[in-house]
Length: 139
Image: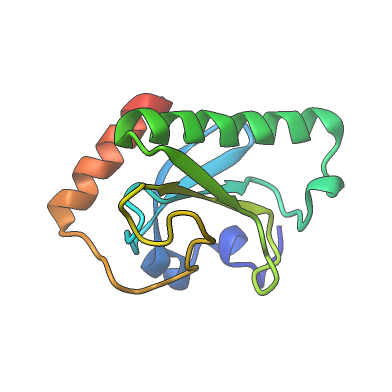
């Protein structure tokens, strides 16, 4: 654990950006509050690592299985023709991956997703519906 880390501390800043969906084998899944890309989630490693290569082979496999499970759930729920994966961590050094459903007629299809466009926020009821749909596929 790193006391300066958004994912380790689970502080108000993190709460303002994302909503916890559930815990998986070695990660926690969050719904990104900004929903320009409907269903966008983050899969954050449960320990504090910055890079994939810091994980031993078994943990790496478990983490990627968690990512795969979430990607499949998003594909099934939202019928997105493509899931983009983003694992930058330049400014937030904790191993996490953005899973971003992309839609043929939607924003940025065929190019890189925008990190935080700050355009689409859901109502509380809409967040609850999306969270329930994803949870039901993951748990």
